Amino acid sequence: DIVMTQTPLSSPVTLGQPASISCRSSQSLVHSDENTYLSWLHQRPGQPPRLLIYKISKRFSGVPDRFSGSGAGTHFTLKISRVEAEDVGIYYCVQGTQFPRTFGQGTKLEIK
Amino acid sequence: QVQLVQSGAEVKKPGASVKISCKTSGYTFTNYAMHWVRQAPGQRLEWMGWINTGDGERRDSQKFQDRVTITRDTSASTGYMELSSLRSEDTAMYYCALGGFDYWGQGTLVTVSS
Image 1 (spheres, rainbow over the protein chains, first blue to last red):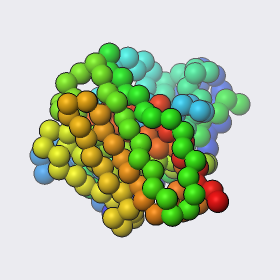
Image 2: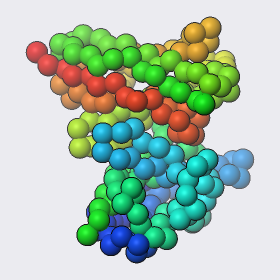
Image 3: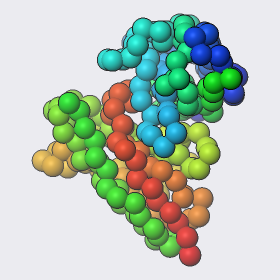
Image 4: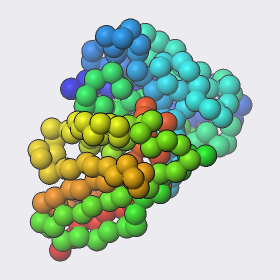
């Protein structure tokens, strides 16, 4: 199974400041169709996760442009250009290249 | 708009089975595969399995070793996940999700307790 490892596990951030989360996979996430199926999810307390980013850097419908994704191969990054109060919660990376699908352990974003 | 509505919370005894439904609307059911994901209290998301809603092909996580059965009813635009031989460690929130985790159900809390 592909192991997904996120850092940091906790990120206290000041409102209006940037935030960055890293996700590494134990194997390359490049699929045989040449796509890289790495997504980012955001989960607020008591709510289901919601999709933010797919295929490394594509924003899902309705996602603000302060969220951006980058990376390749085994190393990926989610960036928030200016953190807002509604961004608190847990962020997960997930790979869709291979079965079984696997998630990172989550990064908790909180406001300082 | 795409909606996924899951069945209600369940309380089960160890050794029992639970079957959760995920009724969808707002799109063509067979256009998206369906995943099942669970989250134990304070834990990370855990993938349980997937079904191609078009042809019924399934992939399950080896972790559940034949305890999980994922099905779908295309006429009802509904997916199902059944977990058998329940144990206390199966206490979790269970979610259905579509495609590349594009859309999620609201979750179904399953509590396993004697």
